Image 1: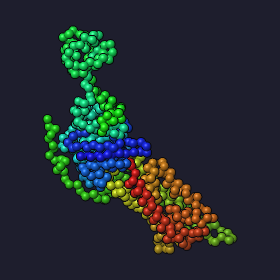
Image 2: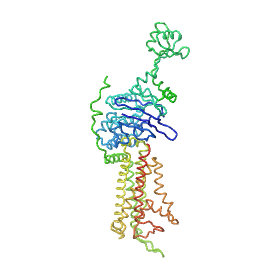
Image 3: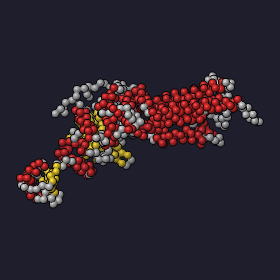
Image 4: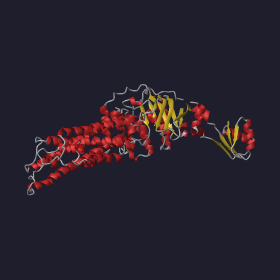
Amino acid sequence: MIESTRLTKRYGDTVAVDNLTFTVEPGKVTGFLGPNGAGKSTTLRMILGLNTPTSGSVTVDGVPFSHRPRGLRHVGALLDAQDVHGGRSARAHLTALARGNRIPPARVDEVLQEVGLAKAARRRIGGFSLGMKQRLGIAGALLGDPPVLLFDEPLNGLDPEGVLWVRGLFRRLASEGRTVFVSSHMMAEMEHTADRLIVIGQGRLIADESLQGFSARHASLGVTVDTPDLAALEAVLTAEGASVRRKGDQRGRVTGLTAARIGELAHRHRIMLHELATHTSSLESAFMSLTADSVEYLAGEAR
Amino acid sequence: MSTMMFSSARPSERAAEPAARFVDLLAAEWIKMRSLRSTYWVLALSAVVAIAINVNAVHSDLTYIDRPHPPLPGVPPFRYDPLLHGLGSIALDVLALAAAGCGAITVFGEYATGMIRTTLAATPDRRAVITAKVALVTAITLVLGVIVSVTSFFTTNAMLASRHVGLSLHDPGCLRAVAAYALVIPVCALIGLAFGAVLRHATASIVAVVGMLFILPMLFGGERYRLLKEIGNHLPLAAQARLALNPGGHTSLGAHPATITGSWIALAAWALVSVTVAVLVVRRRDV
């Protein structure tokens, strides 16, 4: 469990994190979303005690993380896969981390196996691809078998197989009752992983709700249609209870009906369709519009 | 689906955390240092080079001892100083530079790569982390200094014994000279470590520590102003030179000479201030 209370970080006149209050609960994957520069990394660093808050506080399982003498058994973190010394082998890197936390060396081989780096264990990290470094970072986070895990943009540089593996890993860690907090600037990444979303923009909290709640509230699932007889189709669809927003002479955006149903109706009424496309990135665009004008949105929400 | 199913072993039933021990951090830092080949190669190589410089210097001197220059009027007759040549300043500079670089790199190496965030996330007790680094760097460079100092002293004086000018450790000032020649090495390493911690940048740290150890003394070399001379006397390598001075030799200390006690205190103070600065900046700053 991570609890942040009025967390604020200022750098001179710039406010990186502004009065952020949220709770990250165990047993769930919580997505931490925001555009670049929203303050995600700064927040994660404050959780880990790497940066000191200007005001406010954040605790992990009730204790400020910086009060722990050793950290790996409490929080496993992958902040930046590049935060390693390229001159060391993967095993030496993990062995040093494990030794400082009194974690038995056998655990190093376990986590290397788990992330698929067992064969590269003796190679210098400097020669690793970004994806391999991400795997190494995840191995480091798993070393202490911690109840809380933080990941900052963990999917960067991973191949499609790696992305699937990481998603499965996050789901498994959460199902084991752990707190899993994953930052991303891509809604699409979180759509398939997170149970809950915390969205920030310009350092401020924009949304803190379940993924379902978020999509119900913000994502207008839509279907784009392109037809030479838009007026006729509009009449048919409106009669079925859908709403159509025109986007030109032939194009319209339909909400309230699935693409399959629209196709059926068009077929039955002999209306020719040139295009029929479901919007798969509707959450992404909801997220984009939400964060683009986060300030106005916040004033309306009075959070 | 099985999303509500919690794995039995974790995290509630995990074994209790073992007590945090400083020795584990020392071991971790040792693993880090050992796993970077360049560090110990540079240290080992500079030790060999330093010993070789001292041995070669004395070896070359054997000719002058056998055939001394004819005495000049007004100049005291030639007397060979085994301490000045056998524990030479050039060899010491080589070793001091390597030690200072080693001290600096153990800290700036972490900041420059970002490794420090991984390190401090694993060990939030920052004071313990930097203290472990200090302890390890001190121990390794002390061993290095002792090896070079003792080997140089005994080898060169064994060579000189054949010319009946060799000294033993029991002769006046010799033990002190050997000790100071060894001890200044960890002091230089700690100064390097402090610069590394303050500047956190490779080039800046190295330039700063070279300037501090080797360039700064040139600005305090004169004797006209007592204050400047005394500052110069208490710079690390100058303090070492005073302590390694052969009491039976000819070398003049000039005006405002440093005392033995003052020089020991200066070395201790450099070490202490360096450690204090390093601990303070590492604890206080965001990473």
